[in-house]
Image 1 (cartoon, rainbow, N blue to C red):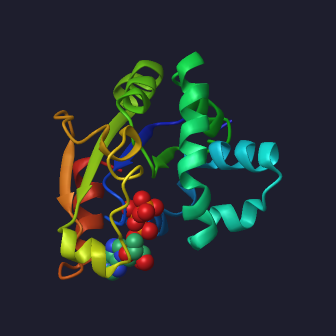
Image 2 (spheres, rainbow, N blue to C red):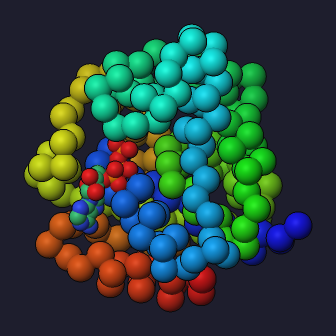
Length: 184
Ligand SMILES: Nc1ncnc2c1ncn2[C@@H]1O[C@H](COP(=O)(O)OP(=O)(O)OP(=O)(O)O)[C@@H](O)[C@H]1O
């Protein structure tokens, strides 16, 4: 059983590039690194419950957006009983030295990881100018962009690293900074 040495929590607004940066970081770090998504057990349990197509739900298409709000409401109910439930379930698949959690959205997510894994946890906040997010397909949606799952960490101020992921910047350089800062 491989011991987890580092957990990189990745946060940022929709279309700021959480998945993109996480995938490129993983590519650079290779097999000792694994991406874990808190949304994975949320989506798989929701799909099972609602008899939806999981592959469609996991993809970036219109299906995902259509069910996004209902799924968030349901997952909030589950979290009321156990705030760390989805984090804990997602981490059952963690089998590598370095874990990137690519979709950290809530204060309670950070709390769960800090309480459970202590100093192994580092927090990365990605930012991106709105016009760039819009170019990437972001459309402001009331009921999604103004609720906790999008804004829960807007005022968090204990990031270990804040990086702007603007298309104009060379993202390889961002990956270098992440690796150096977190000694990955
Ligand atoms: N530095 C970059 N250079 C070029 N394209 C980028 C960059 N960062 C992100 N993108 C592209 O922008 C789009 C949105 O990025 P991504 O899916 O990683 O965002 P996200 O923060 O995970 O979004 P969501 O919260 O909606 O899942 C993708 O098509 C991705 O390939």
